[in-house]
Amino acid sequence: MRHITLRQLRTFTEVIRCGSFAAASQALHLTPPAVTVQMRQLEQRAGLPLFERTGLGITATEAGREVIQATQRIEQAIMECTDALSGLRGLEGGHVSIGVVSTAKYFAPQALGAFARAYPSVEMRLEVGNRAAIIAALDANMLDLALTGRPPEDLAVEKAVIGEHPHVIVVRPDHPSASHKRLAPSVLAAETFLVREPGSGTRGLMERFLAEAGVAPRIGMEMASNETIKQAVMAGLGIAFLSAHTVAAELADGRLVALDVVGLPVVRQWFIVQLARRRLLPAAAALRQFLINEGQKFLPALPAIAPAVKMPLEPAPPRARRAAQAKRTVKVKQAVRNSRKRKG
Image (cartoon, rainbow, N blue to C red; front, side, top):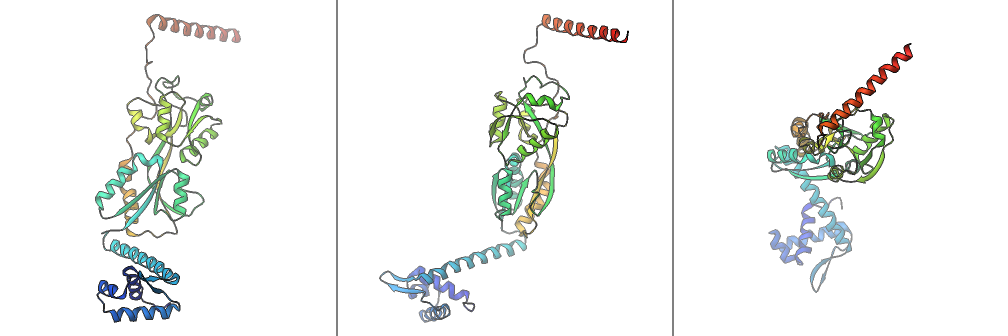
């Protein structure tokens, strides 16, 4: 079989498709004797009957079907090689597959759209999922590139930074701590957290931040969608640790507020990642370089992360404000008297 030719394989495939030597010879622009010779040589080298004549015409035997499947794989490899060579001539085609963690879907489509406009002949396949799923697909050679907030630690990859990636804790505007400054992380122990599913990069970063602060979070609900979490926070079901890029619009229009907690925002980076063992074809290499050079332009614009002091939703009446001020004054005077007594 090492000595068979591509012409013989293509002739055999056409004979089976057409059902006769005569029809195949017309489709291939060959004489019937030439087709017969090709088929005789192919069967001799295979050492098995590859076709049989039936009432429906010429059909493939079991051995013939194996040859057809091998021919299809060869044709696919030739097509991929053609794409690669076309790309080397100036990105006149080619394919690229990229995986994007779900948090990045707030800017990745805009960046990929800009690349598509610059290289309209390149075909792209986009896969969106949580970090664990995207890294698994990258490791399985199902993706050329991955856009993630944290490269894998146990996988040999090449990585490049796209831009900064801040994370914040968001609450409703009327949350009791929404207007407070420099909150200690310990106050978060009393809160109910709405969190992403295990395997999410955002979930892992939240757990590390709270663990370092000595806070054991009280988990209310797990959700696989940032959008669902945002809606749940706005509904008052709890608070959430999220990428600031996922809540940029809600922070800007006041539907959510970022708590001013010591240690926040946690700033990481966005990375474009590829397997170290994988050689990128021209289309994928061009997309990688485009994201390195231009990706930061597509990151959402953020308002000031630390929340400004906000007025109550309903201002307290003058009498209530005077009573609260008098109460604070009494406490201060009492503290001064106690201090003098201790010194005396």
